[in-house]
Length: 326
Image (tube, rainbow, N blue to C red; front, side, top):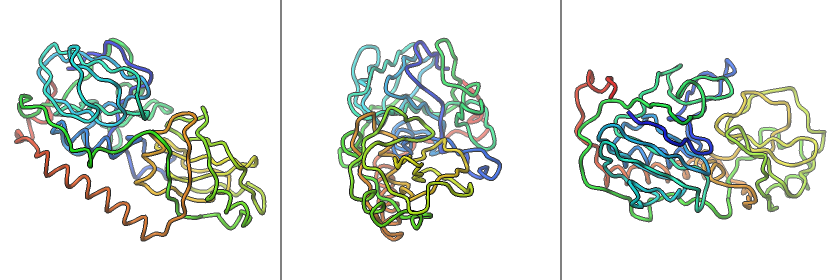
């Protein structure tokens, strides 16, 4: 059991997401930085899809009521265990009664706290991810509050040495954001000048950003036939351009349909970079091909494979014990 002493600015339970329900109007949700989330699980020795905590800008404070082993990855929130600092991407044991405390981010926006055994909240439509707008998943369908008690799944022994990843495998956060994007599906509704402006200009993240989408500010993108279309499908990464010409990039909690023309779609491996961008950060779009997008996905998978070789999973208990709560 983990007791929330201080929840932080916005801390929710997230996992790999809830795919397969967009036809019914339900976003997938899940981690805004899937790579950092997966590495946190590897560092903790948790199952690949185990639910973890996603902290935003300002981390929380958590007391562990039993011995545990945790993994932390993503933005550097100046974490400490009982007052002793630890790295931004690390795995280590936490004794019963131990207190993990996180502060504000030095760089990036989101950090992930995983625990061996996973955060054992109920599964809703195949996922433990929080989708707060509908009040489903996670812990009571909402962000955490002080006093919440988070159940942890049974796991192998929580002892063991601290471990970390080499710098080459730690995903970068903060700084200028480069987003590779596939043109379309409605890039023909933008003028040649507009398309050139989109892929050749500098944009900045505005304060209108959350888990649903990021609104950017910069050079206006010119339409050729107006901004409105018959509403059609949206996915995380879709770049809508309303009438004023400022791009909006959809993220994990994006609605399932939209009525603005979409000039491009940010590729999956790059979308995490936007999820780590804060107000004022520079964003640049770069046109890419489908093969380049696939190679980016392969490169991300190679990082995870290398990390898995360096961080072997602990011996597992029987399936009956894994389902029990601690």
